[in-house]
Length: 253
Image 1 (cartoon, helix red, strand yellow):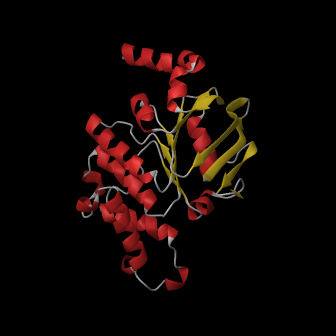
Image 2 (cartoon, one colour):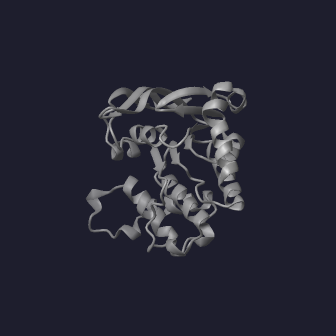
């Protein structure tokens, strides 16, 4: 089932076509990766899909509804969760409180303004469920700033899950992770895709080919190819435009 669709999305900044006529779909039960060199338009595309910026042209559909003019908070309320390249946690709060605050943003009760937020059973339950799903329950009372880098990235996913999303937009969740942390995150993503649609922007090509069901390759704001991992790996244009350059970069560094 298609949960998220980009239809001929373009986003221009003056004369720069950061995203140029991009269409893709994300299905429940799949991880759809978007790859490309720096400046290819990947993060701009995610920003359009989540409602952070408006497209110059084209449209976005969320579970069959046109949400092109919806704000980011409205899309989040409708089931769209998003993580960022940089860690966006509340470092001085506990792991549990980070998740509870995220859940509270989704489960707002303006009529209950006299009731302390910490006594909201619904947000507390949503936070606990998110921590259990991401393997962070044992760290619930730890201060977020004291977590390892990998655990902080897991916490970001948990904060997304606390809002009960159906679609997850994940912008480089593996950045800065070691091999053990990467393995844990990939295991988590495989578990989550059963009940979610996941759009993944990532530079770790080994991880992308291990975990993705579909890969879209962007070059200069446009889609060069979109297919299964096997077909993308064998695509001569992709090898020339991206994979070859990526491998050369890894060798020289």
